[in-house]
Length: 459
Ligand code: GDP
Ligand code: MG
Image (cartoon, rainbow, N blue to C red; front, side, top):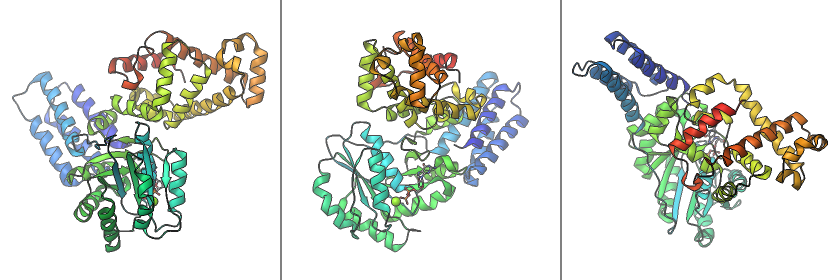
């Protein structure tokens, strides 16, 4: 995401930190590079100019001297970028004791349907009883797409393939929906915000009275998001925005900053095609990640998204009791493959942002392949072997049998056992077993973990 902007920002900070003398020439160079990157990310030229002027003005403040000046400028740079992105983190208020309805609206291809299922999965994993309601009656395949996504994410989905009136579909399921504390509603798009769409949104919102009307925008449109957000605000009174396809465009910066400009809070961003490629948007941690400082909160959110509450609790008990077998490792591996690519994960671990550049892409790919192989191998084991993997090392004939049965090699299985022992050692060391997984890890624990992984996880 925003690779060029990210590297310009990093360079800017490094230049300021490394300069012996913060003279005008250095400042001008940093500002120029940053401005170029912002414009490439499709940020509004006027905003870019303002940002440059502010940084330069602060740099000329003669009252602040020496090291303090560097710190001051670093902070100004950080704060100005934060300002562009909208400063605060916005969260939807969703009460478990009262039903909340969220309606996604937007143009064709904005990512509404995909995002409905991502959003439903996001809240379902956080313990909300969630259903999806499909009201796109315009595209023939819409209900099938939604149902498929719902099934994939184990979310109850209500659709009606042959009904041409969205209101009628809602009326039909109104009673059923009362059983859910969160209802996510997919609607039809159009090529543009025309009268037909406006009328349809009006009709639906009058009848359904959603608590949130969220505009879905694809990041590809860059700063054109400004017009879209303000128009939808005018005619549909939207509460905020979800930006999708952050992963597939260099213009994402434009879309983000345009929403901030129109005071349309960005609640979530979509970062890929997989169900878990979705996160709540927090400007502060977004910047830290761009700067390669790692983003604990974002990482934890992903970890929590991927591991549902039940399996978290189960794992915690296992760890506390010092029991951890291959079945548990398998569950971990499954969770990991749901988290999106390994490289995206690593980016979020403090200190790994930099290290990641040094790991060749294809090696990270191999890692994911390996995870698949390990899964197959575990499936070919007997209960005894799963509970007590150490016996495999003593009886290599078992290893050969498993390799044959699972289409893997004995060396794959040796690596699997190594990984298992490593995890077991880590968990029995007391560090992990003391963690309250449901509360997330604190920063210290996370750094400790990162350090351990850094040393031991050779890929
Ligand atoms: P709708 O017409 O607004 O309902 O849009 P869809 O949900 O059908 O999405 C349109 C396309 O965008 C689909 O191919 C999705 O897989 C894709 N898409 C949605 N969100 C993302 C995302 O965050 N990243 C990427 N790369 N693709 C996405
Ligand atoms: Mg759709």
